[in-house]
Image 1: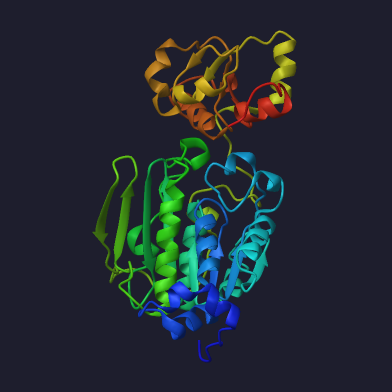
Image 2: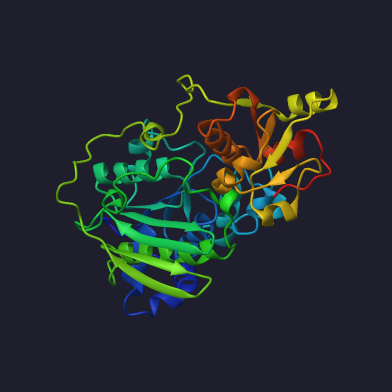
Length: 382
């Protein structure tokens, strides 16, 4: 930020409560106006981030997202509304930001962030804010920030707990110093599978917005070197100290982050699985023709209270499926389902490794969500 832009009369009135703060003042507000922030994601974390950065007068905001607004988002993604369901999130967010503060210049990137485009997209911004919800993108954002020398304002949420920190800032640690290796695939369920308290990303996103504004202003003490942990259920904050790993390998190039996180690459043939995958339409046709598998629902009990298949024989969480292995038939096909197909695949894998005939194990692709969408629209989705 070499030359700071001047404030207009309208902006002086708009930001007056900032201007009378000694730590901000006119020069600080000009720093915010000259600031360039890239927000990756416009979901639960991105919603409060974008709203408060725009309201604060950050002059240029970049927005990366390629998803569309879904009704299930509205419980926590407050930048979107009911009228935006089905609309690309970047377009919905842009409309709300322009209404909130028309002085903000928006850069829209309606595309996934990849190893091919990350360095180009991140290069023009002063601060990068990570509002993503998956490990491959978190590592990608981190590594791109390290290569480019950009501060990375981090946040993550799950159920009732959240984390926040600032990585790669003023010689501080980066994300890999906290998590050198990703967890095994499937170990940490997504918010869609595990759930999240709707207001939780509001708290963590506001903390990220606060850290971003402090960096632009050059004020206060950042979360660099500290991991802030928030437990909403018990309303507790605590901190962990973070340090750089002196033995860590230098980050000099971007890699295949799907492969690094143990996720299948769509360009490669998937490895053989010890179970069969069956679509909901094929399963319905076979059931109508007399197929009589044992139907195992591997979701949690509270999910089954929302919606369940009337013909399911047993409910058992996927992580505990081996506890009932002796009660499951071995001379009969087993049709396994969850919400969207991920947990049921893990359960099928576990049963196959426990000695069940792979030719009798069937994973319902898309789970009960696909069944509701393609077979029985009277069922609710969640």
